[in-house]
Image (cartoon, rainbow, N blue to C red; front, side, top):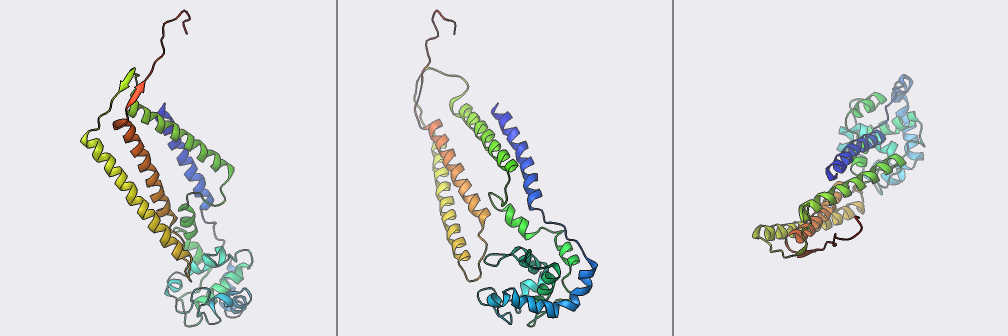
Length: 280
């Protein structure tokens, strides 16, 4: 039964991954010919107007020199990846809010191209919906950000139910396997004295050493992420590394507990007297 529970949990985990992937997949881009035709005509005027009226000037400076927000003039990152500019304008990043619902589609492309073709910036071809559509055939940064979280945004009831049931099944299965490993399948009445072998002692020392190592790595990663988040140009915290280190600490502590019970802790098994006038 423990293995049945673990296999069922694995199947449900696959279903859960499909649900999360559906939630985080980028929305398809509709290529409007009218928008494409107007981009080259609109971006020098509308783009400049939106840059001023939407509040971009206050953070990035009138000449893209930077300020509260990062410098845009001469930024090689945005020049080599223009789709990134579109993604940040639409979805936001760090302290920068999302403008996807505030700006019209033509305004988004106008201000993006204004940034990409001003203050010395110049891209070979203007950013268009076709360019964005091509970029989304790759892995979308928003998808990667969402997948790196332990709990994705906008989690819904089916995901909550599946995740909870998976944890119950895994817990039941692992406890069952641990019970068979630590205590066997038969009860032997009496007091059982345990004497640890050199291999068991080495395993315990290694497990505790690794626990200490991952604790240090976790604390170090938290300090790095906190400093990055508070920098003048905020950097997204490495949630994947934080989660990995925390999970390893918990798993290693559980392994140390299991090793202690198996090889270091004396046990006592009691059974009731089965004789009596009632068959049960």
